[in-house]
Image (spheres, rainbow, N blue to C red):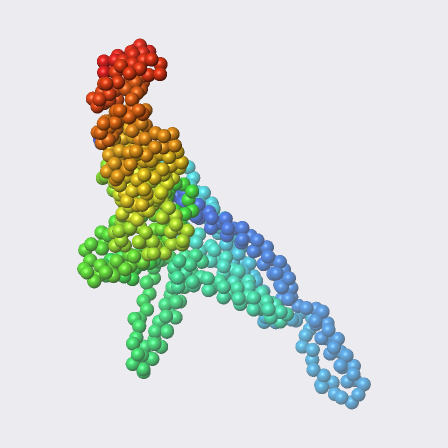
Length: 626
C-alpha cells in the first residue's frame, strides 16, 4: 500500500495544540494510508475467495454425480443374491437325481438383505463422500468469509479520529483472529478435496482402466512437484505460501539424509565433507526478499555482486525496452548513472586485491545489454539537443554524460569505441553507437557546444565528412555558423580546407559571407586559399563585401595588401554607399578607396550621391557622414 502523496502539502498543517484533535491531519493521513492498505489486502482476499467459491461449487456438482452412482454399490444387490440362490438350487436339483449327497453342494452364502459390496466399494464411497463434504465445507466457509470482509469494510461515521481508531480496532482483530490464514487455507482445503476425489477415482476405475490410474499418479506428481519447486528455487512462480513451509521442511529432511550418507562415506574414504544443511524456516516473502535483495558487503561481494547486479540490470532493461515513454528511458539513464557511481563508491575503500576482484566483477556486470542500449539512447539524445549546455559544469551534471563517463571510468577506457568489445552487443547496436557518436558530434559543433564536442572526440567519435542536418560539408556548415574552435579538428580529420561544395564555395566563402571573423582567421591559419572563385566567379572577399562584413573585409584586405586597383573592387565603395554599409565604407576609405570618390557607376552616380539617395530613402544620415 501507500500513496505517492506529499501529505504536508495535501493537508493543511494543524494549529499548535490541535495536532491530535478529532479532525487533525494525522488522522486523515492514517485514513488515507489505511484505505490504500485495505484496498490491496481486500482485493487479494477477494481474488482468492472468488476463485475458490466458483471452483468448489462446480467441483461439488461433479462429485455429487459420482456419489449418486457409486453409493448404489453399498446397497444389497438383490439381482446378485437371486442369481446366487438360483445357482445353488440348480445344483441341488442335479444332486437329487444321482447318488451324491446334498452336503456336497456348498451354500450360496447369500440371503435376501445380505451386504454384497466389497472393501473397494467402501473405500471409493468413503473417499467420494469425504471429498464432497470438504468441497461443500469450503464453499460454506467462503460464503462466511465474504460476509466477514463485508463487515470489515462497512461504513463508519464520525470524526477522522473516530474512524481511524475503529478501523485499526478492526484491523487488529483481523490479525488476532487469523482471518488472512483462514482465507489462505481455503485453496489448500480445496486441493485436499480434489486429491481425495482423485484417489477414489483411481480405485473406482482400477479394475476397468489402468491408464486412468497412471494419469492420476502423474497429476499427483505434478501437484507435489510444483509445490516443492519454490523451496528449491525461490524465483519459481508455482507458489502456494502455506505449502512452501511444508516443502522447506521436507527438503531439509531429504538434504539431511543425503548429508548423513556423505558423512559415513567421508569417514570411510577420508573424503572432504560438505557443510551440513540448515533449516532457515523463512516465510515465502522473507525468502523471496533475501534472494532478490541480497546485502552486498566487502566479504560477500564476489559471490553476491554478480547475482544482485544482474537482477538490477534485468529490471532496468525491461522497463527501458518495453516502455515507449521517452521520459522513462531518461529516468533509467539517470538511475544507471547513479548506480555506477554507487559501485565506484563501494570500490574505493577496498584493498588492492579486493579492488582487482571487484573490477572484474563490475566489468562482467557491464557486459549486460542494458549498458549498450542506454549508451545508444544517450548518444541519440545528445544528437537531438536543441540548445548547448550553459557551462562545462552543467555538461558534466547531465545524466547522459555522467553515464558514459562513469562507464568508461569503470572500464578503464578512454573511448566508447574501445569499450564496445566489452559490451558484447550485436553488430547493429555497435553501429548505432558509432553513428550516435558522429551525429552527436555534428549537433555539438553546429551549436558551438565545444566542450561536448571535445568530449565526444575523446569517446571515439569519428568526424563525418558531411553534416547530417543541412546536407553541406560539415566544414562548410561549421564555418558558416561561426564555430571557429571546431574547424581545426574537422580539418585534422582529413577534410581539405579548400574543399568545395556543388556551388564551388569553400569554407572560407561561408565564413566570410556570414561575417565570422574568427572562423576566417582559423581557416586562413589552416592555409585556406583567398583567391578561389566559386561558380559565380566570386571570391570570399567579394562575398564579404556584398554582405557588408566590414571586419572580415578589413582582415582580408590587410592580408592581400593593395588590391583596390583590381577592377572587381573599383566600385566596392559605391556598393557600400548604395546599401548603407557605413562600416564597410569606413574600412574601404581607410584603405585607399577615397581615390574613387569621383568615379561614377553605370548610373552616373558617385559614392557620395549613392549615399545621399540611401539616406533620403531610409531616413538615415550615417552613411553620408562616413
